[in-house]
Amino acid sequence: MTSSPTTTTPVPARPAVSKLSEPAAAAAVTAATKALGLPTIREEYARIAEAAARERLTHAAYLAEVLTAECDDREQRRRIRRVKEARFPRPKRLEDFHAHLLPDLPEATLAHLATGAWIDAGEPLVLLGDSGTGKTHLLIALGTVAAEQGRRVRYVTTAALANELAEAADDKRLTRVLARYAALDLLILDEVGYVSLDAHGAELLFQVITAREERASIACASNAPFSEWGTTFTDPRLAAAVVDRLTFNAHIISTGTSSYRLRSTRAAKKGGLKN
Image 1 (cartoon, rainbow, N blue to C red):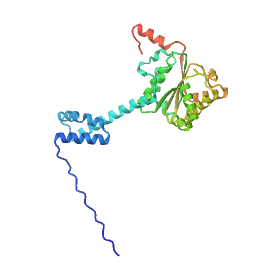
Image 2 (cartoon, one colour):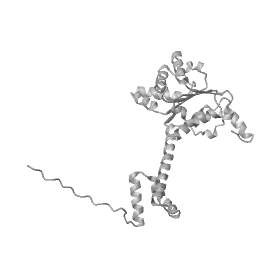
Image 3 (tube, rainbow, N blue to C red):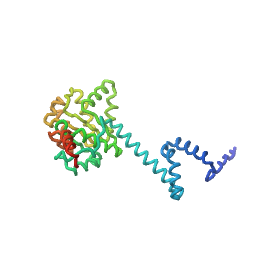
Image 4 (cartoon, helix red, strand yellow):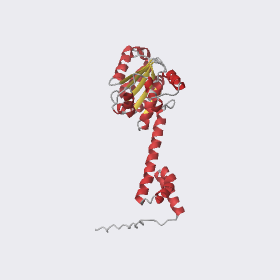
């Protein structure tokens, strides 16, 4: 028994160009950009079309302009989203940080940190100094730069992270939370040494640090020298292990003992700061 040949219905060719009125074209653009998720083109295509007509751009050049506008706006939204996801407690920018007030922070070092190369290399950053010496400002500012460069960043204090991990362990969610912190490009751990942790919290925090060792960066700040970290992590051996992991191939910067806030205020009152 022979089978009959399969027949297919030919698909009619689509016209190369549809003849649409201006209102119909506008409706078509709105529908298409909504379906494709292109909000910038939807908002800007008419304005760019007018400019393209004045400049006598080709159709291809006009298309390039609207696509570039969409890409640029999408990149801007992504930067804003990354900064928001980092959960910084307040905005701080590098351009507002007056490095000349910290003699142990050369401009070349700050410029290198701003590139984010140390994050790509998985190197730690440790800031040591008294309260008010600019540590948190610098952490947030560098974290903001990293987030705007497209990296996944999270800011958290040591006590808050230990509490979050303990609650996750109680709720049987610890593995998921640890995986989330391990996936970050940069973990900013502020206020190390401010609050003593119980043994369980210290051990959980150590798991996060170990998971990122030599693979993903941690930037931390403390007002206590390494020799006093035992009061935070309670177990001297655990404290030594934490110090070892956070200082290996690390950028260690001393912010000193003189208040950065006070010096900034005094300098501003005398006629402005000069970087």
